[in-house]
Length: 108
Image (cartoon, rainbow, N blue to C red; front, top):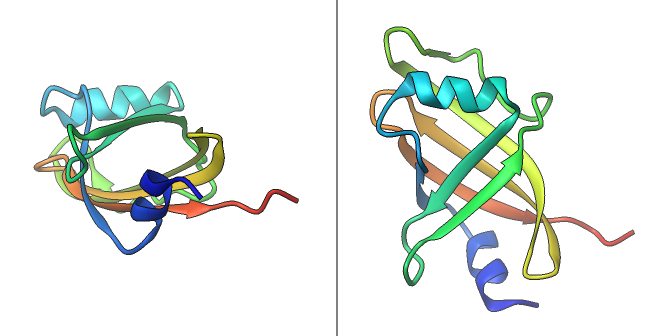
């Protein structure tokens, strides 16, 4: 198993929404395009992951984008270092920071 994938699959880690310029509006634009960028900040140099948003597994209704309040969960599948994973990140709309982890998907 890849060391980075294994590390990010164990427990929660600090994340930020990447390339949103600190704006909940820009995050909303990413969500509307069904593609988000999340950066795990506690890896060497940071690990930025981009993935297609799985709206069924995400929780987008718990935040208010206009008032930048509440938090949302962004989930989606991707392949990292030849391992199929699901990224799940919960972020605060006021700061665009939060926590996240990877879930290793079965190769079935």
